[in-house]
Length: 88
Length: 260
Image 1 (cartoon, chains in turn yellow, brown):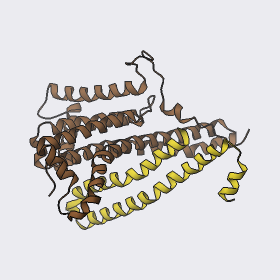
Image 2 (spheres, rainbow over the protein chains, first blue to last red; image 1 turned 180 degrees about the vertical axis):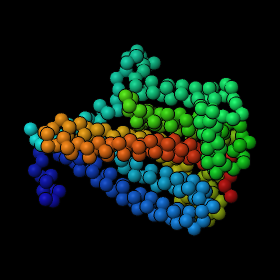
Image 3 (cartoon, one colour; image 1 turned 60 degrees about the vertical axis):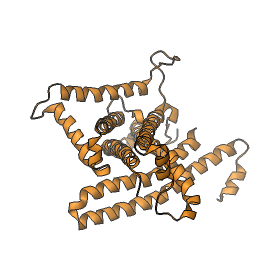
Image 4 (tube, chains in turn purple, orange; image 1 turned 120 degrees about the vertical axis):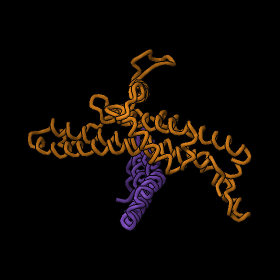
């Protein structure tokens, strides 16, 4: 069933809870897409670099964790938004 | 009674703890505050015990302390600041104690009977991130002067003059607002997510075990998952302590010299 049709069935104050639940789900789901692709690509490239040049593995690993930390922040902000929408 | 109706506790029951000491006063203490004090006490104890009678061949606690100092020096300071980080005497103690404090605050997540990471409340990561923010700005101002520090962080060299209209506001926000914010949120959200994950599977296992006889056999699935996740959370605790420390080192190291 389409969202507007569902919304029409929900009365009064429940509409706010309905909207919060729906947008909380979308907030985390959408926020996870980009960082998911990004971290996958990042770690893949890092593994390739380590396989080609094992002596540089330490440096690559440090930089990889830094990159993961920056990329992952977006997904985590999405998670916090989800918590705020759902529970706050 | 519905077959699989789960009573998931509201989130306030998972992370909020009542004051057990001097409730309502400014020095009131709850579980989170106690865990913070414990983390500090453990960090101090490790280094006092290790340093009290330092043997040439380290054993026990001294081994752990020396391994962690070595890890911070080789894996964090030398990788991000180079030799200069070792010449400044305050860098190593700051980063090592930061690492240990966050590690202890995180690892309470999986200690049976406690099972609450102190860093899953925003106040503690926010305070640590604020500390790092003050230090890296202080280092920048002390090393480059206020004008020089603002110039090197707001006007990165090698950019066409006209583009500064775009670049400067972005740099302003990303350096002075987003950095501490993301530093705090990264630690907080990782630990909160881990805590909720563990609670979810624990609740699922208990609910299935208390349900009908048929479902008792299925209980083993969420329980095995719970055991795996507990192992995973140990990894996350180490990783987040490491990432917080290395990012602090990157920010402090970046403020020491103008970019070029």
